[in-house]
Length: 78
Length: 423
Image (cartoon, rainbow over all chains, first blue to last red; front, top):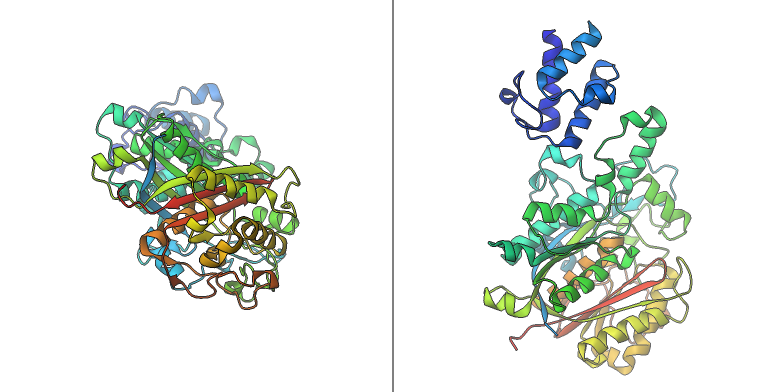
């Protein structure tokens, strides 16, 4: 779980170019981290690649915060 | 008709980044052509190009991080990054910083490209074949679209006026500047950021131009000698990359804010060959009419032109046809003018060529010095009596300069810039 959280946060930092400290569990990609809709598409792709999973579009639409991403990936890998 | 002057310049070329650096290298007779080392050329007939020198940003090297935040670079093909960098230099040079909403709405952008994001298209195609559609970046399309240079420049600087883009192969840069000037003349805006950008030196681009038999292939071991317009041994053009951008401004607008004025855009001519998709018509009629139209618009005669920046790409056919058209138009007046091809130093920047060459023409007026045609060791017989400024730049009187750009599809554009003397 913590491993997943760390890897998720690392991807967010790299792709959005934000400081590590801002990437808290509750941070919203769009409202808090400056992402636009295309950035979030790319983030989901990066998660898929990193964790070797597929995130369907309807699930991807619900991944709005860092915690949403961690929870979804954990459920897939659990 | 409202008058249009040039108040800002920006360059990213194979000779280096920044107007003063590129210009000095050009006047010093330096070449920007070298062996391609960024991808495999072992099976390509042409193995050289005019690549923008990369580095930390000092000494004329190009550092994309100084222009675009790292996280945003994946949203832009290199042609966009070059265009954004040249535009930033030109805008800063002009000192134009719109403070009001009206000023922003009266400032537009028209930066074109001949090919656009070919590298992005090429690499994404490979990715699609290998990994399927789910791996395609959402930034692929906006990184490849030609008008996204204009889009990014408007977003970065807040310019809300006409947002447009020219696409006419190797005439793009000249058409962009000419058409942007007209938008100002027609009072659609007061300021236009205009020019061209290109970055097509990749396996697909080189293979494509080589297949069209357009590229030099005989000088792979001596890259600096490959681009040799008007020389008997020329055997095709050398691909270059980069961007040239100018700030065009309505004369009274520029004067009112005390802007530095480099030159006035007085003439613009354009025509079509209606002949062939890649070859120019033998009689050079399209180029002739383009130049004649620019002179007419300027209210000038050939005797008023002191410098011709030739299209001169170093192809066996194209150089002679252009020379013939210039001779026909100028007649005896050509003996009083100098004509050179700066592609001998930069290679052919395709959609950016017309813009960087318009800038070199402006600088020739500013410094009263014309840049050389490199590698002109044995001029073709037809060159007799024409001052092609071989090897070394030359100090001379330059009142006005004419810059030619001709492109695939038989499209021709000519620009005339004139020194601004305050009246």
